[in-house]
Each structure stands twice: as structure tokens, then as C-alpha cells.
Image 1 (tube, rainbow, N blue to C red):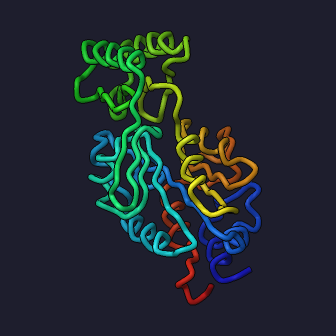
Image 2 (cartoon, helix red, strand yellow):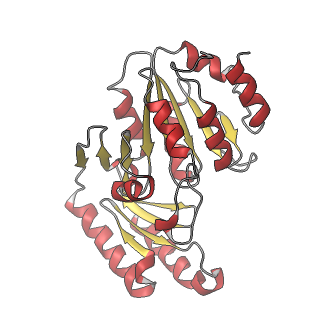
Length: 272
């Protein structure tokens, strides 16, 4: 066991389940792709979603890893890219937003995947419905989805509208044109066809043969990514150790994620 693996074992005991030899796999891979969720993984949840800043030191740890030519780092989020940049700063890593419908490369090149007119019409109707029944600044229309945010509100005050939106948005997704997905702190109706897993697959296809994909995330939407890399990469779930997941290992919380990233060995480290 090298110094970095010993450090991880001592400081992050919550990294568990089928991850023996974690650092060894990273060291032996010709290339490593580290994919990171944002909310609940790098940044603590906040009732005001534009106050959900990453923990101090997280950005610096990511930049250190991304500077290693053997590593590619990408942020994969359900948030629009402009929100990630506002909260994290203009960091030089690939950022995928809106569950795969927005992509910004390290050189600043950005693209938005257009959704079908039929999908847009359904989402527009769902957005209008949410606006007429809920607090306007708690309703978000993204490029390929509409979301209602309930975090920080008294559950008793939003019980009826939450139940109504869930019922109607689930019904809207029956035909498969759009899909209903709850997330930590809210509900979302989004265009079908792309998700975090498909976005990761596209990114991996541009990387060297034998790239080892690693995905760290906390939410139900991250399960798409865990399933996508199952059997050829490493999925790490952030949160309670007894939650059901397709990931291989666990990290207890965002503090553990930050510690893992800080301990991450790169080619410039003297210990490597």
C-alpha cells in the first residue's frame, strides 16, 4: 500500500464495498476519466440553489487532478452550465449540464442539444402549470426540462402542489416522450433520450483506449451514470451507506469527497 492509499484508508473509512485496490486501478490505467456530480457531491444542498457553493478547497483539488495529462475531469450535472460556472468559477474542465443536453468543453466551446418540438410543448405546458400553482422562483425551465424546487419549505405548505405536480408529470411521461424524475429536493420533468449516462458515454468515446471511468454522485439521476460504466469503471455513491445503488463503493458525505479529491495521486506528486 503506497502513501496515498494509506492516507485514504486512514481518513476516509466510509469508502467501502468492492473498492479494494482502488488506487492501484487508477495507477495502472493508461488514462482515467473522473466524472463528478455537483450538488450533494461537491457542494452542500442549500434552500437557495444559487448559494450552493462547493466546499473550500474543492475547486483547487479538481484543478490539480485535471492538470495531470493522465486524467480527464468532467462535471456532470442536472443544473444549467451557467449556474455551475457562477458557483464554481470559470474552471477549465468539461462541464455537462441539464442532464446531458448542454456541453461546455475545456476551451470554452459550448453546445446545446435541441429537443423535439413535441417535447418542448409538453415541457412548456408543465412549466405553465407549475407557475400557476407554485412559487415562481421555485420553478425552473431548463433547456430540456422543467423543475420544481421544494428544499427549505415546510412540507405541510407544499404537500398538495407537490402531489399534484407529481401526479400530472408522471402521467405526461407515460408515452415516453418525456420522463418524470424526482431528485433530492424537488421534482423534474425532462425530455427523454439523454441522461448523465449517455453524456458520459459520448465523452469516453473521445478518450484513449482503455480509459478507466470513475463517477462520483449522490442522487437518483446519477444511477444512470453508474449503470453506464458498470463492469468497466468505478461508481461511487455519496450518502447513506444503506441506500440502494448500482455504484460499486460509497462515500459518506461531501467532506469525504473533498478529502478523496485532495488525496488523489497525480503524476506531479513526489509519492507517485
